[in-house]
Length: 108
Image (cartoon, rainbow, N blue to C red; front, side, top):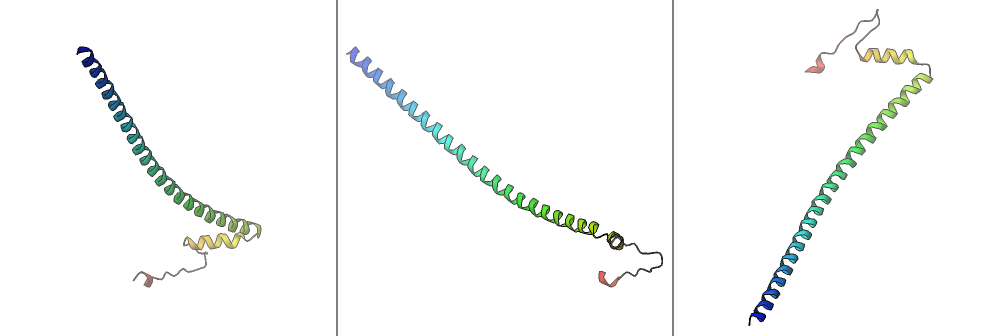
């Protein structure tokens, strides 16, 4: 009887070890899938954010390129005096013999 009992005890221990191993493997797989899922969601979010940022930078680059082209055209046409005069007027400067009038009705 003791031999049968010891064999049954060994079988029971082996079954318990298999159950624990199975539970452990399932826990590892589930935690791996959860981790991978969160990582995928985070990376997708980062990619979308960076694509928007890339489009903004491209638009800014194109605007700067357009401004550079305009400045190069001004330099090539030897029309720098009129360009300097235009920029000075935009900043509120005037020639020595000019009188500058300000429209104060626009503020109302």
